[in-house]
Amino acid sequence: MGLASPRIHEVPDDLLSAIDFCFDQGWTDGLPVVPPQVDRVTAMVATDPRPPATVVATHPATGLELTLHAAAVNAVMAGCQPDYFPIVVAAFEAMNRPAFNFHGSTASTGGSAPLLLVSGPYADKIGMNSDVNLFGPGNRPNATIGRATRLILRNVFQMLPGISDKSTQGNPGKYGFCIAERARGNPWPLLCETQGYPAGASSVTAYAAGGFCNIENHGGNAPEQILISVADAMANYGCITLGQSVVILAPEHMKIVGDAGWTRKKAQDFLFTKAKRSVEGMKAVGKYRDREYDSQHAEGAHPAVEKGFMHRGLTPDDILITMGGGDAGGHSCFIPSWSRGRGSIMQHAPIRENK
Amino acid sequence: MQLFDPTSSAPKRESVRAPALPNLEGLRIGILENGKLNAEELLNEVATLFVQRDGCTISTLAHKSNASAPAPSNALTKVAQEVDFLITGLGD
Image 1 (cartoon, one colour):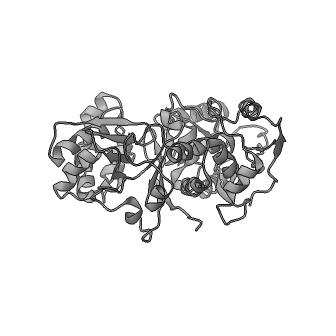
Image 2 (tube, rainbow over the protein chains, first blue to last red):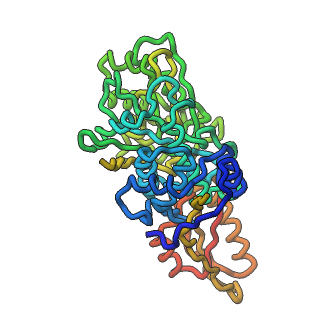
Image 3 (cartoon, rainbow over the protein chains, first blue to last red):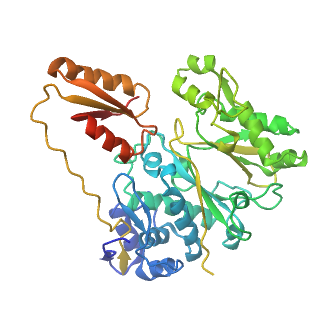
């Protein structure tokens, strides 16, 4: 449980002044926030049946704690509706696991942003976007859940640019990076199903994302053609590491892959096999390290690992693939993991729906 | 209008500095390298200076598999029993 009582500030009874007050306190991401009035916060935190002082996540380096109450304050500021709050909470429950390493991934020069992938019926229930303009603006839950994540990192965990957040360039996802998995027309089981949650349950997957790489292919009409384009992006010299990958296939691309009978596993295997660079090439650009090669090629290595090559990741399971985006356009994306290695491993958690 | 403060209301973890060593003569050095490029080389160079100047010995080299995560507490406990002081830092 969090120890101290939440602090309250008295400000003039004027909305614009309250917005300016939040700017003055350094509580924003550079954009105006919704002033966290007491009644709004109370309504937000009431969506979770646990006591407001319940600790959801703890910073591994500073010991700073995120309570449900503090999460609710920041969710209000981000513009969330109360029914978005279970996703914000689940995201930090996932990120709180040591393997996610949210201190490193948010402090590092690598400039990653937590990508939240919401899977299951709860996304539709609150009106999330999994369709056209998937990563773009315009959808309130996508925008504000992602923004709440950033505000919590800033305000609760004090990940402040230039002080504790040393991102060299950062990435636009640091304003908010939250999407829903598209169920309509998806030939594969949803992520929440593959993650082992019961029917009807939803999940959020958190991934320390290094940015966004568009994959354009309007001419290919076979799975291999589409996925080689993806693999090439995954293995470009700027991106290839031992880290994990997220691939969001556009519906046009997924139709080509799915109609040919390819399963998710077959696509993962194919991408892992093809997303590689030769040792000579890695040496030529100064990115080769014996230690990394050995960890990928050690006894028990995945059978697809090819001698003399560095693959992206350690196994095909390191590649999350699903579908998202609008019906038209051969634009998929690859989202690289944070920085150079396996410092953060993606995590998922159930969304606790308060029925 | 009443606004809740969005910053953490929980206390920060207390940190204390270890007491300064009275002298370095003949002490045992531990090295904790973080796995980053050149970290081991850099820390060994630093430790060698203590060997040359103060007659120290390098007794332990410990590794972190994840540069940005805290060192495992069992590794620190083990090293603490084997050395008099520890050198660590970022590579790259």
